[in-house]
Length: 482
Image: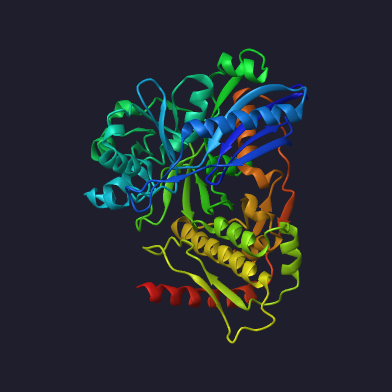
């Protein structure tokens, strides 16, 4: 592959949308980002939506900025990644009606209409809640009657982006896993589930395989961006699965992805369910592979918001330097992280420290408490995963922006008593995974870096004491809301 040829990756997360150019060696050459804009829908208690046309305008502008920055290079291929559970609804002319993000919970009051949640879990690998796309659509149709009659098709956000680039509709398998309209084991849309949620199977596009070529970019974008004719658009996938791909794990490896949320997953060969229904089973972007997942919830978002509060103008490295000065935690946080073994989520949280307030209590203590809670939630969910099938490996893979924190890496390694391995490109893992998909689709030869860092487990006994303190605090908050 010529060194001046690059891949273009569109990555639509929960908080922001990014467009990146990546070289054949996996080096990110340019990355441009903007916030995703959400509006509240007052017909529901917890409803958010976005304007797909506005989002597409942002993507077009960011792509233009990337091309302006990288200069004289040739685009080899384009792909897209996006947040899971989010969808875009389109009309009969293929125009976008509305976008429903992953954190839209308009479907919460419709959860009770599901007569047999266990049956849904058997088919979809996940306990059905308002997080998933089918309940979002069911709720929207119930209170937006004018829009309900116009819905002709449904796509994940990444599939919609690829549709805008090619004019070809499709739905990739890892994204389809998040709809609860898809039989995860069989790898096909389920007529039974479509009937249950009142969604026509005809509204669901043909299923596409990640890492294959969907089509060529439309001429209007060739002209706009000055591209050569016939640039291929590669089928992408869910951002978590692309992040996992970036670590190049083997089957039965465990991967921790620290982003807005923190999935803890095991790559598996066969469809597997948890009798206690604690886990999700998803299609991977790798052929004939699944991922078994527990999830710590919006941990990374908590960290980001605390950073904005206590360190609004400082870098993350400044935080790490101040954390180096701390000893044992004097502040403990319980901020609603999810634990697979618990049946309900916490809606109340906070910080606990000795009173009267000590003059030694510093802003770094609060951030340390947040990072420690993330590590403890990872341990809880890691333990639930290995409870299902064991884990005899002495390492886990880690990726995602949260692992830029040296302290989080060390906390996790010591708590789970495993080495933490991190590869090059871990900070933008879904982008790196997207570049690997492009290389796969075009049979490009790319090298895989060895782990750039291995964090050895330390302080295991000390961390177990701190962990016990965290559990007590979390239990206390649980009693407050019970």
